[in-house]
Length: 141
Image (cartoon, rainbow, N blue to C red; front, side, top):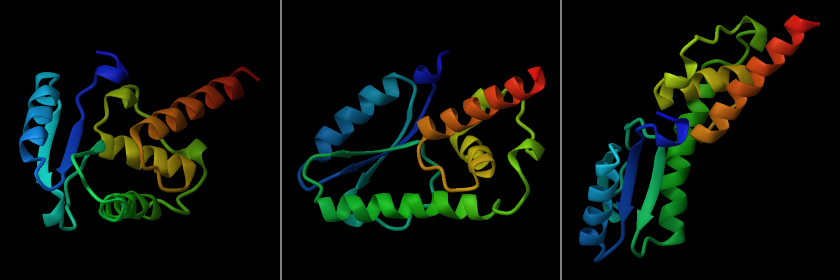
């Protein structure tokens, strides 16, 4: 399974009157083997779910979208802060199967390498891949 085809945990927020549209979208995503949580955006609370992606269906105000995104970004920042000052990236062990890690584990690894919050899976993958390439190049020299 390629990285683009990997299962994702998706929070699908829907706006007023878009409940059925959100359910239909969830069915499509679940058919692709993604784990989908459908949430009424107006009832949003500080969720603890570990997710890979946030999506919006229907009319969700920009203000509410930003608030939801900020909460998840804050969680990513908290992860990174728990690893600040742990040493340089050379000391961080990158497991052989790093590309099979769950998003929270990958996010934690990438945050430790980068020394900052990593919000998206694409960024996390890029950080780890770049670090592996850097280490391979350093080993050649």
